Image 1 (cartoon, rainbow, N blue to C red):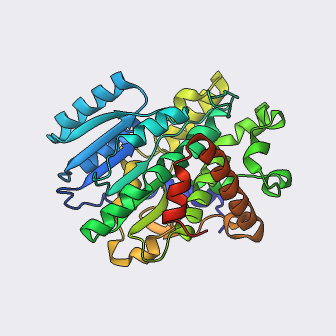
Image 2: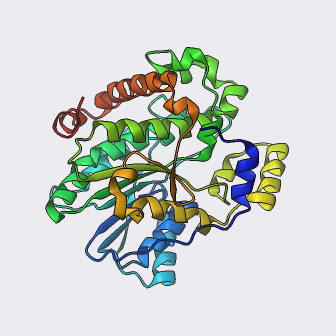
Length: 341
């Protein structure tokens, strides 16, 4: 599927579908990146559905405490918990996952944390920050918590949901042949050649493409009877804390103008997260591995469904697991017991 700019503008000026609702009594929902922006608004929606536990996961504890307080005040929800996790630090991610005990249920996991950095910044683990936060850290949390989600579905005869917050900007990602044709695309994207201003200016688009590849790759490797649905959602252009990472007056002015002309409110954008988490229950198979926009399953980019995209998806999957199993050897057990290779 192609995504002309005129279609994007049309959608941004169209009425946003209403938020989905359900009863989450007794269920556990975790939202990673929930102290501000889309994650915060999604957490408020979940809080109004009477969840058994609502885990607000973020890297800044003081901001997280404020978020929990604001959610409780706005919704009267008394089951919010603050957990700390920093996707830019693999040790923090494994510590976060270790907090879940074997008998803890996890019905819905939303991976919303992400950054948009047009300049090169390196994490403590030696990766460009967008590649680690938006892809590697997101994948590591998802896979480490995979057993909890699958076991929850089996125990309660339900289907757990893993929601990856992606974006329609993946339609406009432009991946050079030396990247998509490489057996190690992440290593290429992390190399000095791709740390300059031009590739970094497109890095967010690339990372959202990686989200779609991961969603499809993981769902493909789950056995058909596994009670877990993985999908990627597009919130659309909306007011977001991502803007805080922009540098320079020109870029800032351009984003302010686009916000004024086109942007949804953050709450409106968060409705897509909710749809990914609880929507489409009448046709669960259609939701598996889906890319969701405007509360509908839509086709991802032409590159994603192309032969070249398929090859990159496979190489990305293999390389990602090679990287992460070194950081978290316990992943080997998860892969062996829950995934089809």
